[in-house]
Image 1 (spheres, one colour):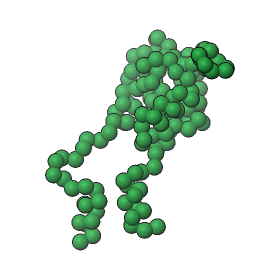
Image 2 (tube, rainbow, N blue to C red; image 1 turned 90 degrees about the horizontal axis):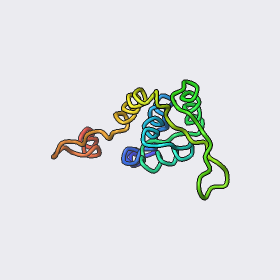
Image 3 (cartoon, rainbow, N blue to C red; image 1 turned 60 degrees about the vertical axis):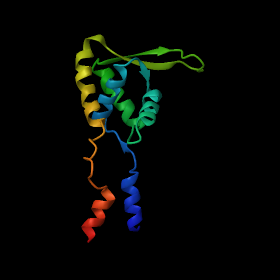
Length: 132
């Protein structure tokens, strides 16, 4: 390791994997926009965010929790151009209000932090000045 490795890490940090609590909120946020299936949920997160990732294990654990609580329901659907049917998920209509509440947590968590005020120095510049 050298100091340049540290700067590179902070310039382009590795993705953060969602835990089950975040995954539940993320899934609900997406399902409020329309029905979806597991691999699409993972691909959409990777496409929309360079910061976050979702493992299969955490995804299906969160889906199992949501189905078990009655928050979402699953059904099989033949997707055009695909060989086998997909297990699609949708929010149960009785849970829409609670789903919006929980999706809001994801929206707040995943929102980019506010940018530094004009004229403030970069992280690298601040770090360099600490060494002087």
